[in-house]
Each structure stands twice: as structure tokens, then as C-alpha cells.
Length: 163
Image 1: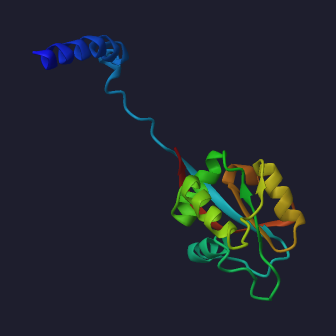
Image 2: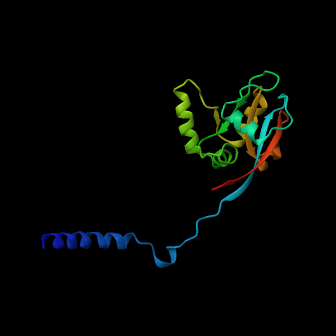
């Protein structure tokens, strides 16, 4: 008897809260927004001795498994800021992981003395970084290459999507 009164009391207190939180009938099955496709372009500094890279080579470079160009010069990868939707698109398309998963990856490597590639705030900043940094590699959207600086060369295009 006491249990049934307690259960009725809980249901009585919970039901108005649940009803208030319930979405209106027309909004219960709202479709999720579709991902927006974007063309990513992997760019290198003009003096880098490569004209093309494969998807696997880009992945290895950005995971710091390949650290030197074929000539022996150091590779200087750069990322966009972690909050950039383009960085998430790049991480998923090139590295096969989300930015959140990559953060966990870099945190694990940090304790072994490995720092992640530096981040820049915007696509124009990425173009500037790559054009002025020896051995640099980065990525931008195809639209950002309209005002491509002279010191930058495209080496790979990737199809990606921004959620």
C-alpha cells in the first residue's frame, strides 16, 4: 500500500515535467540538417619538393608519422582552430576521426613529449602561414584559393562535408 502511494506520488510529480518537455506534435520528427559538402585543398609552401600527395601521405604527415620531406627538410603541418567546422571536416575526411577524437590522440602523445601541429585562426591565416613557413603544409576550402598567395601550391583535393 505504501509503495503504490509512493509510486503514484512520483508519477504525479514527474508527469507534468515530462509533458512540458515534450515537443509539439509537428516538431517531434524534424529532420536533421544535411551535411554541407565542401572541397578541401591540401596546400604546401611553394619550395616544398612535391607536386602531389596521396591521401595516406597526408594522413601520415598530420599524425606526425612522417616528419621530413623526401629531400630531408622538416615538414611543418598546421591546423585550423579546433572550433572551425572546416577542421572537423578535414579531420574526418583525411584522418578518419573527429576533432574530439584527435584531441584525445594528441593528449595521449603530449605525455610522451610530442606536441600537435600549431593551429591558425582562419583560412587567410593558413594561406599566410603556409606561404611564409619553409616546409609548411595545411588545408583550406577551394573557395579560399581564389586569392591564393604566390608562395602556395595545391597538392591534393579531398571531398568532405561540414555537419
